[in-house]
Length: 310
Image 1 (cartoon, one colour):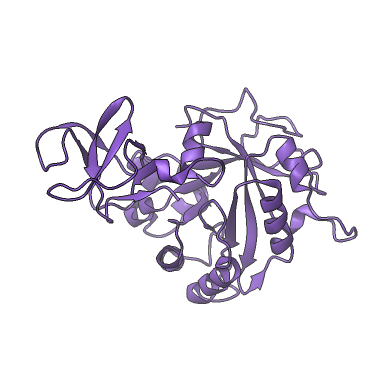
Image 2 (image 1 turned 30 degrees about the vertical axis):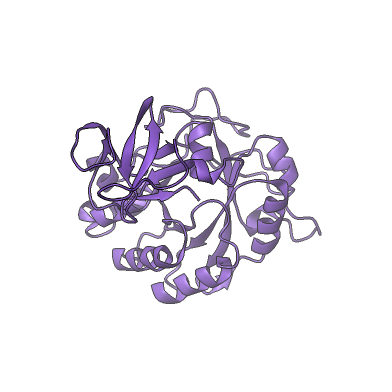
């Protein structure tokens, strides 16, 4: 579900630029008109998006948190070759949001391609990468309903609300509650982290040269987004979070820095917690002293369980 829809973003590529003019997308205008994050196409197959470096640098100058994405195209390279191309393109500056694999093809890419690509980037990036896909794209893959390994990777859902009137500005008050998600996420009650809710955003309003424009919304509040993306004004030393791939579904939130003296609640995967003290607390193991939803307690500081928000 998307109980709160507060944070608006976009995704862009060379198609937002008119090659007949010298101008590129005006990122400052995009920010001034309400965009709070942006995903920028970096590569496709063997190629780099010709506007990537301009868009990447201009978004940084405007202060818009950025994530890069790769369009999967099996006609041009193996998963390894495409992952290498993507990583070589973005490794100089990963931005403020996780890198993304954009999977849209129905017939020429399988689960093995997707799994290899995501694992390759996950091993190298400071972030856990995101998978962008649509319900039909994913569900038509052989074996996709049982591919629960993909739940490690946050979902960016492509599902336009076709009731919206073009051109769209902002997050419409009549936007549908939430997009349907592919079966493996649905069967495990895992919602999308981002949602591409329209392809008919007002491009010129947001500084693009194309009239068509993809708009997205983050699943959560502005405070949630700031914690996930601390380089956008949040002091990263004040937060830790449970890892999305920690070895259990929950981590014990303890009343003391000791094993099993009692606990106040269990913390799920990917949950940010505010630090009460900035350093690890020694005990029978190392702990973080944290606050969550009004509770103060201790969680494991083990590297497989928690990390600082960064």
